[in-house]
Image 1 (tube, rainbow, N blue to C red):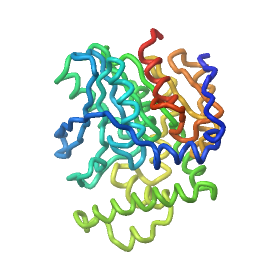
Image 2 (image 1 turned 135 degrees about the vertical axis):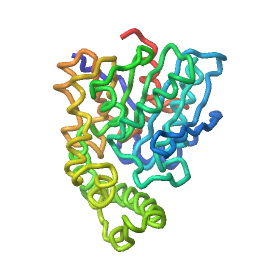
Image 3 (image 1 turned 180 degrees about the horizontal axis):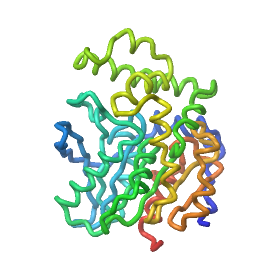
Image 4 (image 1 turned 60 degrees about the vertical axis):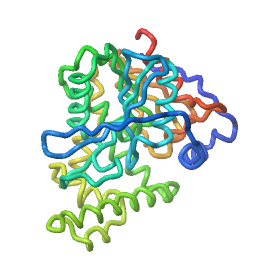
Length: 321
């Protein structure tokens, strides 16, 4: 324990993993969220942009920090959907745009990766210095969930204001997830990620032509190629496998000290068997693992404005654990 029994039962059509994954990205339109952008200047000379939205009840003392997934940003529908649900239930929210994800090329050669917990720590400390929230929770989606779990389990002393956390569709084992994405069933998803990442590398090459060549970028035909060429080297790892090994959050789960929910659907086509940390949840009383049969990757559709992961996140954050 605690392995949680899931009550998520979507309409029949959304029991298909591809439909539940694709629909929210292509067809969901979340309205009613007003965001205010703040730029945080970092000690290394770079910046991170935050998108704030506020509770419909003034002067909330509760805040959720939200972290997007691979090639996401603070305007993705899954971010806005959670922010709207939180704002309607007395929570402020702030969405972190990871480096190079806010629509403006960052200043440094490095950007973001699945282990960028130091950037999350910097943002949390900024919030604590500039605001007076009594209750801060964190929610990470996919890659952002891995960053968050790593942050929580690395052994740092967390501020007492940080109460709970939730990770949605999180690849706890990065290489296992990569191997799953590389399968033929995920070809369309894989190519979309590759095209987005290579486009950003071409932008980076203009600024850092001494570190990146156009021919090397063109030669990348897989996510691992990109991680070998850029992600690992730009962030201080020996190679892609060293990056996956050191940044996978699964190894840090045993150290998590606050109530933390992991919501991973069994039919998530991006997650292999090693991304479901059953043993870790059984051994750590602070780790709550819910594995519904359906939901795809950040899917969890329900036939109203609020998705299941949004309902579960709010309930988990509001209930005494």
